[in-house]
Length: 178
Image 1 (tube, rainbow, N blue to C red):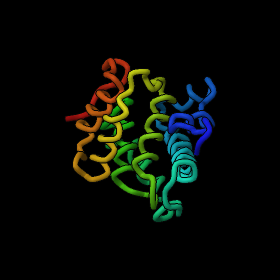
Image 2 (image 1 turned 45 degrees about the vertical axis):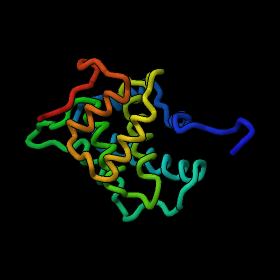
Image 3 (image 1 turned 180 degrees about the vertical axis):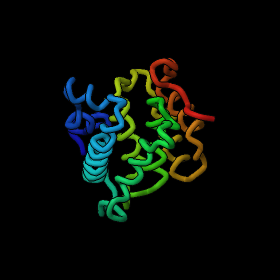
């Protein structure tokens, strides 16, 4: 692309921005809201991947197996005995990144899709991309997660919070269980 028509990955979030009512429903901690979150995140991931490959290059071909995208997203919201092992917003974002970038549910664009999806999730949860965002750190994080060099959610969360310029613990920057 040339002539000033280039879009950034951040521009991909615009069509999926939530209304205030949708955002309030999405932010709900009610377990009954989980299927809706998973469906919305799955649709967003499919849209982001298709658009990323079309606009920024890559090999087409959608998902590697039916239901795989939904599966890697759903595990983010899985509970054990009514206990959420990763209740913090950034830990859930780390789970999304690990699921998409590390799980490779798409034929191509998994790192980009994973990061755009976590940006959308954080935005929907009230944490927008900061002006001092560390792009090089985000690229390194995605490459490390995709390669399997970093799998631990606490470690991914810590790197993600650092990439986002540090986040107050009360705002969702916790790392989940040890």
